[in-house]
Length: 263
Length: 188
Image 1: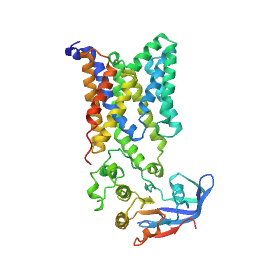
Image 2: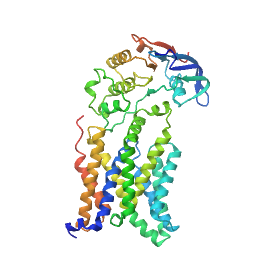
Image 3: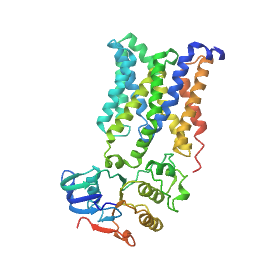
Image 4: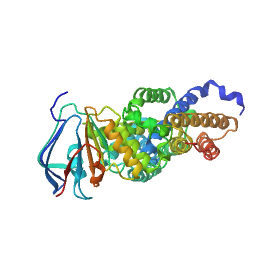
């Protein structure tokens, strides 16, 4: 393929869809990391993949199955009322097992299972882009409100409850937002690329940024740069997009990690 | 300014499945500083938990003036090893807009994970005292602090009284030397 094909109208919707996800997922990832729940993306992505496969088996649209599974997973996590990675590890194993067993019992399920694991960005449609736009709108609208409360709750855990607020509502709202985001991303770019977007940019940014505000800017900048590079290289070199994105994020992390914030 | 107490404990027995501490009674009004003093494990934090919901009021009554906002600095502040939040960003979270004390000013642009334990403790105390909460609860605020930081903490308490009430929980009664506070011994 040639560089000119990057600008082919066929790739515009996938390019925009992935761009929006690459912008939002690392921002949510920063708060996931703050809560020490960095396994969340992988656990939720596996569960949403399983939901997509199961939806095929019962004749429902895979995106609906993925979103439904994500909401159920977030609710289960909320019921346990504990932060950390334990619940997400359990969801990861359940999702992996259910996805592969579902795929083994259906031809279309197997096809979908492969595409969810590896990503199928080039086949995303306007419905995917619309959902990504809705996600960006939610984050842009509620982001500042949510950010303040998550940070406040992290550093002063008793403050919300002492002032009559319900911490579990905050946790549930955030868990649902992460689950919704991961479900959309898994449908578009696959399990591992989704996990990489949530995990790697915050991991690097937390080390090198001088403030929270800059950490968020670093997350978005790093992620979007890696995404555009991966998108172009995957087309020009005729390579699968998911592995290319993960490779670009890992390479960028290795370059950036030696830098440390001075203060 | 109303003389109505911001917080009243009336014969409160607090605990979990079983009573841990009490009965304890006190009133806390605007401008008051009350020290709850007692040895480690005597139930001071359980007593405060009856207000914040982490423990239960098994008998008696906790009465809080309607509309009272609370700032709570916990016994062991959450201090991560790798979080890029700056000191001034932490103060903005709690709306601590008052001019910080001189000991904190040089630290405002520093990441909280690069502060010493004592510096971070002082910062979280100011995050509670420098905001607009009517009731400030400081649970073992002298933990991790060297003598200079403890002196700075006393100054913070003296300089920020206003019409707020401050409840200080500590095992070290010496902290209140030079601080105009009522002291209530717990667990005796």
